[in-house]
Amino acid sequence: MPAESVREVRLVALMCAAEVLSMAGFSAYPALLPTLRQAWNLNGFQAGFVGGAFFFGYMMAVPFLAGMTDRVDARSVFTASCALASIGTVGFAMFARGALTGALFQALTGAGLAGTYMPGLKALTDRVGGPHQARHVAFYTASFGIGASLSLVLAGRLAAALPWPQAFAALALGPLLALALVALCVNRQAPLAAEHASGRPRLHSVLKHPGVRRYVLGYSAHCWELFGLRSWLVAFIAFAGTVSGSACPWLNATDAAALINLLGLPASVVGNEWAGRVGRIRWIALAMVCAAVLSWLTGLAAAAPWWITLGLLAAYFVCVMADSASLTAGVVAAAPPAQRGAALAVYSLIGFGAGFLAPMVFGATLDAASGGPFSWLPAFATLSAGGLLWAYAARKCATPPMRETS
Image (cartoon, rainbow, N blue to C red):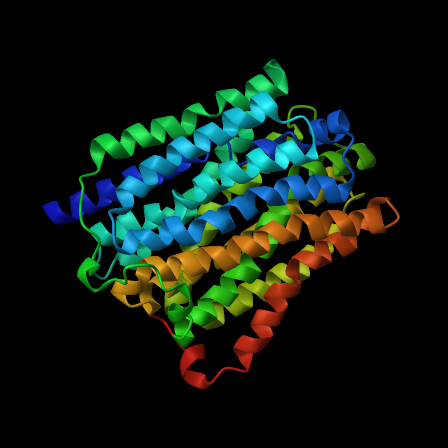
């Protein structure tokens, strides 16, 4: 393998590892949701509000943090944001004692993710390019699922041995390790086309590009479904195990959710490879339709034998993640180099804005339903509505976009 290729592979692996570590606190609240709902006496809407606040913090911070990477080295944004994520996680452990305080520190932690996820991708794409860039993007975006899974496992294991505040506080170490890794191992480098970048990010201007706009809307539908599902995944698995009476004694709800989340890595990477063969837009639309069908089946299966419920959840999650890397690789390819940071900022802003609303809509739907096993069906149906609309609109596009592969 040429030395340049080895260097690129090492950098991709390093940034993937850093992203995973920076997300140590990402799934802590969903993992501990059954405990916190009882301790804080939260209804479904309140529980969804705290979970959604994470994405609200992300949404508020990402225009500034991701947008500025067109002008300053994304490495600096990444390391500073790791510190912010650690502070938010420790703050939740020390001061959160209800819906409002919990939401405040979830939002702060979400702001930290806003400065690591897309800025980390920008740091990577500024340093590696060429014909394999889409594949590098796929591996990086797939590491998000590994981070979410590791966070679930760690939170569940720590909470089994410690009171929940101590478990939360321990997870703050992950972002600090990510900070050290990037600070020590990634060289400083000016952003690509920095001399052509605007003095301040013009986020609205990137939406004038039809390709960017299409992927931004697709990502909003994707995030609505993905983050709504992730926010309630542990609670649903725990409910299904209790109602069916068939839960496995050696597999708890957080571990089951972590295993399901891990499926996102191969689903995202393989999905991106297939998108290159059949056309990116066509593949994304197909994945969204399949996810919609499985969302309804999963909602119906709350009282089914536990293994059936888990199997449907796993298949559903695979379909949700099958378009993830394709959407991100698409917006990177569609955005002009001097506006790539701004494009990623808009992409994340609208996507994670949908992720902020989805857990609350899901929880409010649960509250409005009867409360029995079938109350999960309308809640799950809310997750896939956006994807179906996007897939329908994609079929109405002109022929060239439908065959797009770049």
